[in-house]
Image 1 (cartoon, rainbow, N blue to C red):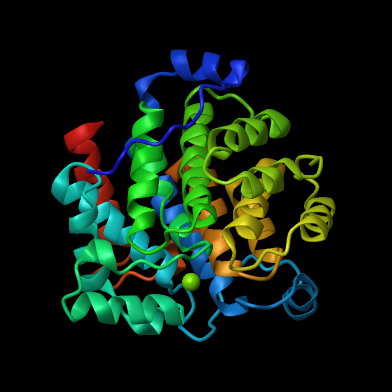
Image 2 (image 1 turned 30 degrees about the vertical axis):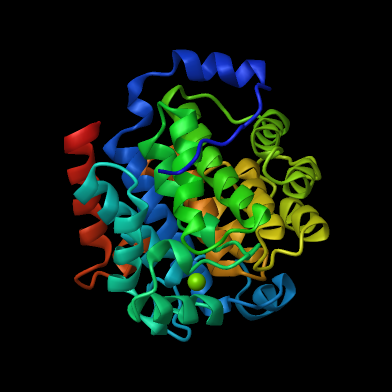
Length: 337
Ligand SMILES: [Mg+2]
């Protein structure tokens, strides 16, 4: 059993008020599928430009808002979504977050072609060779625990402590550095809050939203909390200004501390699901992961209906693609919503 973490007793009053009166619809098929397919959309949109700078993306594609081919065919998802699908399968098969089962799903679904980092590749080899699932993680501060976790924010929409514990438990399978753990917790809590606000039709207030998440994860990693609090003021709807402000503040790289805050910023600066994800990918750097994280937040907030048809049509639909994800979400909701 994963030990409970002291998440501090500090709270942000305005959001607690919303949470305490939020209806159960924060955990709905639309928000769960929105978070799951939102993650896949951001991942697939960012896939062809992973590692590019914002300027390179703009020069080559202008406003990148269509699924393009890259190292994989257009609409393909990468490691981010593959690991998210493993989490969905765990929720569907086990009724909750069972980390031992999830580690097996990670290994069963693992396809190196999806672009896993070298550290995860060797971790998977150790799992395959029989090393116990709770002995393969390394002390990584990367964003890998955060990139896949969003769906847990919807699943645990009614239980903040369980949301945080589950986010940390799934992260510990691969990442044990406090910064990697804090990134996973921040992403799950951000998706959770997005789902809650979406259910009450409340507009997210950037400073309060960021302050709330930073306070919650401060006890795990103070640096990531500071990086969240460094969020520049964001004017909703102004993509160009938000891109300049976010890229001027964050490296947008593979570290949790430089990837989770700009992903949150892209969501908070946007007026639609499409704008959030386009903005996130346009930041450059770890584009597929930042796109995946923003997509999960935006999908939880605006719901499945807000995802552009053109993106859903383009999304990979192999046996473990779009339809499988929808089927898992439907099953999870039939059992739990
Ligand atoms: Mg990836």
